[in-house]
Amino acid sequence: MSRWRSWCRIRRRHLSGDRGGIAVYTAICALVLLGIIGLVLDGGGKLRATERADALATEAARAGGQAIDPARAVPARAIAADPAAARAAAHAYLDRAGIPGDVTVADGGKTLTVTTHSTYTTRFLPAVGITSLTVTGHGQATLLHGVAAPEEGR
Image (cartoon, rainbow, N blue to C red; front, top):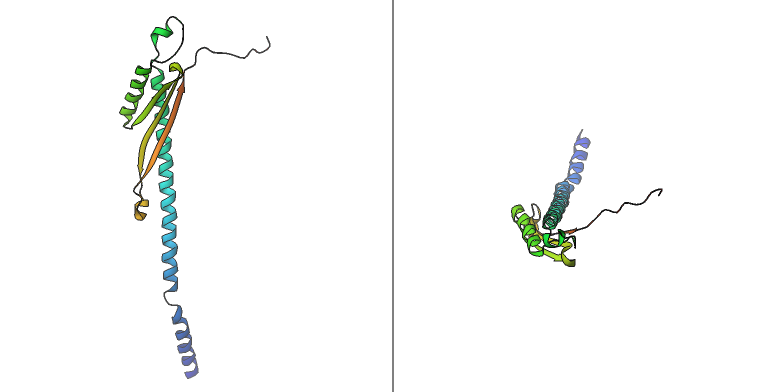
C-alpha cells in the first residue's frame, strides 16, 4: 500500500507542472477568435454601408435625370437635363436621405454622376483604436432618347 501512495505522490508532482497551461491557451484562442469575429462584423458593416451609399448615389443621379430641359426637349432638339435643376434635384434627394454628396452634370446634360461621402461607425475595431471607416458611393445616370429594337426576320 505504501508503494501505491508514493507512486501517486510522484505522479501528482509530475502532473502539477502543467497546471494552468490550458487556461493561457484558451485565453489566447478566445482573443484571436474575438478579433476575427470583430473584423468580419465590421468588414460586413462597411460593405453594407458602401452598398447603401452606392444605392443612394444612383437614386440621386436618377432623380437629377428627371429634370429634363423643356426648352430642348419640346422642339425635339435633344433630351438632356437642365444642369442647375438636375443638381438641385440630386442634392434634394441626398438631403432627404441625410448623406452629403457631389453632383456632376456632363455631356451636355446627358450624364449625371453622383458621389456620396459617409462614415461607418465600427463596433469591434475601437478596441484597437479604429472608431470609424470612410465610405464612398458612386452612381451614374445617362439620359437616352428613343428605343432601338433589333430587326428579326425582316
